[in-house]
Length: 303
Length: 274
Image (cartoon, rainbow over all chains, first blue to last red; front, side, top):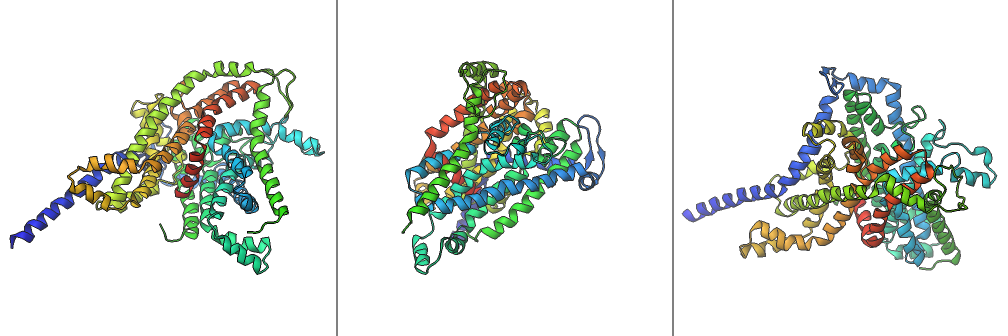
């Protein structure tokens, strides 16, 4: 009779040892994550409920900072700008990427495509700061963009693209599109290579043209890859900082102010820590609110 | 699959065009860097007298040697530790699967989409209170924490695919869990680990926000952070700025071109898993 008891006891001992062991292995990651991510995250929420200049005493203001976020035009404008950037950071790379990938699918194995793979990845490898510097110069009054325009007889259009109220935000968007279009193209191309070629052959036998082929085979098969592209690029748009900081510093006026940069200015130059934190919380929630539905739509239940 | 010559040609032309657009800023940067320092060159004109010396000047002006040294130190501080911690936690969540592993893993997943700006403010005060402001630790320690969600996710994905009898066999031999981890699982995880290493290297090297907020002295920053300071200092001398920007790109570009295949694979996988 005692055998099962001892066995059960041994079982329990093994089980508790397994718990210890497992969490012991996870401990370093948990500690670093808790100290440098979770704790600041909770503090952000806490700070957002106070009025604090970072030095003196802080005053409890409840949801006032959030209220200001909705009413202060400069602050809500920064959030709108982030959404506008999505058009350039996500829309352009994904649509252009789909188009290019579909066109070059047949030559994906050629030498040219191999070279293209390397070249298209360059913007992903360099720091965004460098991309910002390159493009500020390219888009300046005497830059290459204007030179090209003049060369094709559109000299009237030339301007300081990043300094003009009307074009500054789209110009920043173009920089983001340049950074992300290669990544999207290659991701989508990789997805296309997984599509069974016999599907295309069958479609051709049925007399489907390239457009029909694209709409009924390529697009549906790429659901997951498109999801990945949209997720990555939407986060890049909403949380943009490096490019804007270098290319425009949020100017001219407030024309290119984005939440990331506004948080930086509020917290470290204007000393409005509470307000900066409220905006930070809003940004975090916004990213989640955009990314979670995309994930749900495009992921099958495999993970 | 039958393809018409014309389709093929359109594809090629399109591809070449896309490559040209991708390379244009690099070319513009390079050409501008060769103009006499202090001038405002226009567009893509090749200078009459290429000033190769600009690169040398920029190298000296930016203190490139110091910057390289600093970036390497930061990478050495961040990458190996992140790899180790991420692998250990990935092993725990993916293979040991102790009670609570699901909830624990979920907490890490939640951090995946977190924008760094979201926590930079409290992070500043925390790092200040730890007395680490303006040291390289101010970049290293938070970055390890911030890289944990991705590293854990990445390594867990690897360990989940490992058959569990791999452990059973070794456990019979009486090998301790740590030995099992080190001698059996880590060697088998090498492909996943090396891709992760590439990604973490890149993200550390190019880290900008933490560098400009937490470290004032450009000589103690990452390359990207230093480039920001360099722009502030030499922003009016366009050719010198361009030369400096190009020089700062050289290390990453070299590493990229050497490990190209791995890089592309890692980045593609990385975005899919992330």
